[in-house]
Every structure is written in structure tokens, then in C-alpha cells.
Image 1 (cartoon, rainbow, N blue to C red):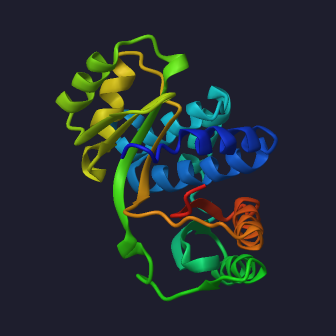
Image 2 (image 1 turned 45 degrees about the vertical axis):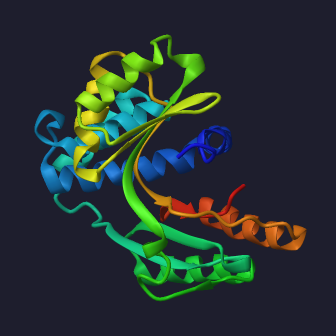
Length: 242
């Protein structure tokens, strides 16, 4: 894992999101609605909802906004049904991109995603065309500045709870889990009061692609920015070594 900490990227994304609270809150609001529909409104009996609530708090979503979202999803039988769709494709120089979306209109989302790829001179591929280059893992990032606990203590808590890897980077700790163990590890860290800068089940690249051509970098950034601005898009994963 060493050498490819995504903490700087996460901080960058968070700074962008600070200017777009509406976007990130919309994204999380949809995740809350889906989690409630699938497992009910009680976080104690719904691990997926607990994970979304943790993500909401990491993004500074107010508690009353979270509770409102849960109540709305639980009480509104005619609520909009969101569907999960994943798109895979290529950016400049073969950069692999995976886009996870939650949408109530597949045609709109497909058109927007295709447009984002096209504008950056990339293309949407067939399902599975790039996902084999990624590993689906739980990924928890801890900002060293926010955490006073010793690295060995954090590592033992994580490993005891079922984590498979622990890495110390210059400014952060990164914990990797199997997807099924993610909730247990996250909750063990939360129980110890360890603040998490990011906690998600992610698609982690097996290898990374470097871009040296300024035009390629500009085109890829255009695609990523357009995807980031789309309310239907939940997550974007890529193997560009920024």
C-alpha cells in the first residue's frame, strides 16, 4: 500500500466538497434512503445504515439532517426508488475509471456519464472491462493530525477487529479490510474514539498509470470534474497516479 496513500486526494476532494455541500449531502441522502429501504430505519439492526451515518458525520452532515433523511425514507412508501448502476471505461492513455451511480433515471445518468468520458477523450466500455484491475476492499483513512493514539495501538485494534492490512504513511494511517469485515473494523475504531478522515468500501487499483502529457492530464481532469458535479454519481475510482 505504501507510496499510494490517497489521503492527499481525499483532503482535496473534501475541500472541493466544502464548496459543494449540496452535492455531497445529496449523495449521502440517497445512500441513506437506499440503506433504510434495504435494512430498515434502526441503525442498531442495519450495519449498512450505520456505515452511511458514519460517512455522513465524516462529511460534517448535521445530525438533524441525517435523522430527517432516515425518517423520510422510512415513512414515505412512495419515495423515489434509486437503482445502483456501475459504469466502466477508459480515460487518456488507458487510465481505468469506474463510476458508481444511484439514479432514478438510467437514461439520464448513462447519457451524462458517456458525455463526461467523451469530453475528456475517453470512452465508456463494457461491464468488467476495467474492474478486474481493482480490488474491492474496505478502506479507512486516519489523519495523523487528528489522532493522538500510538500507531501500534491503532494497528492492534484494527487487526483484532478483522483488518487485513495496516500502513503508516507520512500524514495518515491506512487500514484495509475485506468488504465483509469493514463494518466491524470501523465500529471498533469508532468505539475507541478514533477519528476517521474517510471510511468506505472502495475499489483499490492493483497498479497505477502515470500521465506526463499535459493535454492528457487536462482531459482526464475534465472527465473527473464532470462526473464529480453529477448528482447521480456516488463514487468515482481510477488508477491515475496523481
